[in-house]
Length: 151
Image (spheres, rainbow, N blue to C red):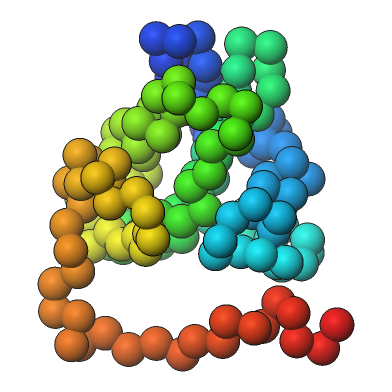
């Protein structure tokens, strides 16, 4: 069952997939983010469908911000695709998304929650994130050109 909360500025943050504007979110991430440039629509749609995704909606119902958590909803999560539309920045939506994330019933009691950010460390630290511990144990397969190769 979807959950939602209202901010003091009149925005609603909700995890209701029926409200989520997938084409708009895809434009944000594929055109304006530094991490998802040129992600194909179907790839993004699959990622959204297989994640816990929530968004902030302006008083007129327009989607204004989003975030996504890749999770098993029991032990681990990775917060990603946090984005606030430029027209709605400066209204506390980043903090509202993070407060919603921290309180969400499907994201409690985890052993580990991760995120990667190039520019918002101060925001995330306010919500308990710290520098990665045990980084020497982590490995990755990285393919930064996967979305642009073969087009």
